[in-house]
Image 1 (spheres, rainbow, N blue to C red):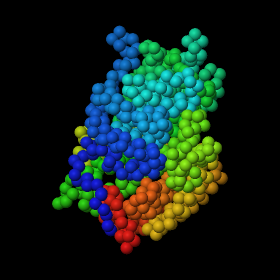
Image 2: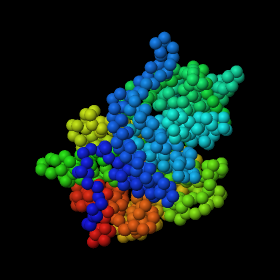
Image 3: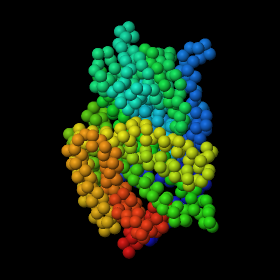
Image 4: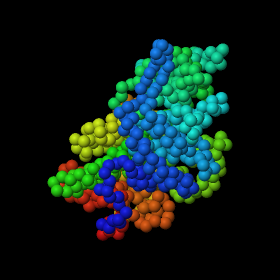
Length: 627
């Protein structure tokens, strides 16, 4: 097999820091190039490179300090009066200034310098991905700031414009952060059990909220969104309204008490506490008794943010593992020369490719839907600016679209993203835990010690399957997407189109395996549509993972086909490359391949023969694989 000398030599690095995370993550580079328009990509590349360098140096160094000396709550002053003060270490304030002023939120809502329009929300997610190479905890406030801004953009009548301006500010001194207070002790994932009440205060001209919120991340945010029930509203989610509840008003504290910060396993950078509303002023967002639907819009973005965070953490764990394996010697040679370690690193790399491709595809669909809604509100032009079309099958054709065409495309994207987003969050969160755990093992005893970053990566990763809905809750949401949006229809259409577009002989066996699984999945959809609800729920988690595997298999094969045609990142002008063919093959074999004797007698030497290409991002000459 011929591999070019452009592969990354991890033996030249000492650890996964004081490096540029964008430069080293060619998986993210490829996916960003695939889903951005040409003009977006030209603008974004140097900024993502600069941001990757910032995160790999200053932000990563500060993150370790913050993990040791995180935020502290001082609920009362020396006179016993409520002050709700959260004291942050200076390293955290520095990270906040640097990251927010890099445009991580602002660029997706207001046109950044050098552009006439905002970047797609996928750009915000790509930057969150890079940020999570350093600190998943800090990404939580960033994600909620973007989510709160999205809710106000969609539903505010203009009365909360000053809060929207603060959430989307690219100047740190004018910035306010967002938060989402959903969880109550008696409710948990059952949001309809919310007991917080909202009563109208005629004199103050606002609602007053009374109740308790049990798990409030970014507890002192000025742009907090909370659900409450107005007097007379029905029980369940249909009776909930959404309110913006500031930390303070006109320099005075709002009427609430931050009782304590949670003593958490990880994500130390985000202060998570218990909040008691004591008649706190709240400003109604949108229509009353429509709060759950409005909050669901934020939840979609938060779940994508969670998936992007998982991919970023996987990327960092994999980077630390590659560097350690290239530098640590055992039995006379670096441990990445030993067969078992080669196999582990290859499979970790393929998992990273799969998670990132799926998540960024969901982000692309999400961005299309938001772009259409902005165009309908008159906030954005309908020129696609050379964007790849997502209507039915991937294409590099671009051009002008009418609003009607854009809305049709957005409806298709919405139905598909409603299926993919909960799956992205569920699968990548679990993958992050598994990858971080094994990355700790590769470090040996050092990995278990707090001085080394894999200790924190695992602690931080453990929250990713929990935030924004557990795997069981997400699996039930998959069933709802199939039932209410008939999301299986665009799913089947897109997967079939992708598989039909793959014609290269190198991919034939993998296509056959994915197609067989695809047909079985189609049967599963039909079976669960006709069975009783209890059995459907029993199989929901298995279905969630099945959809991920089939969709990802088709997506990787379609990307591999383009690379073999010399269409790097979906665009013409490159040399044929078979590396992604190897990734797609390995993924298909692991997920769908028959393994007699658990593969022991298969003679499979994939990890030994293709280690440098898959792990080191080496370009592979297709002719050598054909031979």
